[in-house]
Length: 399
Ligand code: CTP
Image (cartoon, rainbow, N blue to C red):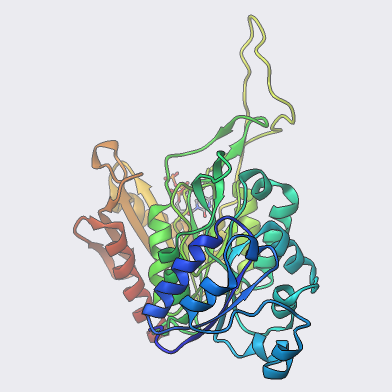
């Protein structure tokens, strides 16, 4: 799939730059031509010589290097690739991208290009969580940049959290997803996934056991069939699907807004376990214990995101798929749910604790459509995703 593709690999200055050497090696093994570009601070972590030796190409470094300008201008350099990969992408480089700053070769290339960009952020967890970085990250994503990672884990600085660069093999998968051509090429598909968190106060929230595993697997399967996938996820444990556009939300209301922003789409799959209720008047400060009294919570109903999209009068996606997590009378309840919500299919699963489905790696589903109920054997969530994706291909082809 990647043979003879050209990738411009921008390496910015973070400790994770050492992993980019392995990334180059893995890409070369797949027959990819890698043109490396290093920022000034990247050179503190890896040498241009090692990068260029692995890539078997010159490592570009300076904007005002006249020889380079004579050989290949920066505009041409930025556009000659099939894909631009930034790995690692530091907080600083992300800030420049978000604001259109072009003050060195890497940032100038990123501003001058009309080629798709894939970003692999890497930084200390505090820098990652800083509102400024999160703002920049949202901006970059809404500018159409694809992202992979960051992952959660131990950091070089001794802290723990989000900010580790995705592993080279994950970046390769994300690159493959960018080039995926298949029966869904040209189709835009929305997937919601994960739980929502409904705050009680700044430190407490109401949540559910959804891990986001099934939604993530569906997004991956659709991406590999060539679809442009917008993945709207609550705070889920599952790693984010490579190659999809990721929109992170926390509450049901935020999810509803993100879904509206993602429209129009050809198909919409609502795998998220959305909280039905939110706390009325969540406290802005932590609720303190008070001797002799217990706090009482009152609830408001959350918007039904699936029903709103399924019942759109104009611009309704061609195919709307809902999920039903049931503990009793699965087929009967899910059939009623399909009619009530107005969606085309319901993927119903039996989530009684003894099935081990919620939070587990397997799923046993019943697909409810106009044609009736179709019971699938118990299988891995990845297999469910692949089979569902194939059915989506058929449905969209029938139009
Ligand atoms: N859903 C949604 N927005 C909500 C609630 C649910 O989009 N506020 C979607 C879920 O993503 C899933 C389906 O609706 O696709 C699940 O519906 P469920 O929450 O089970 O429906 P309810 O009508 O709340 O049914 P129940 O009586 O089982 O709670």
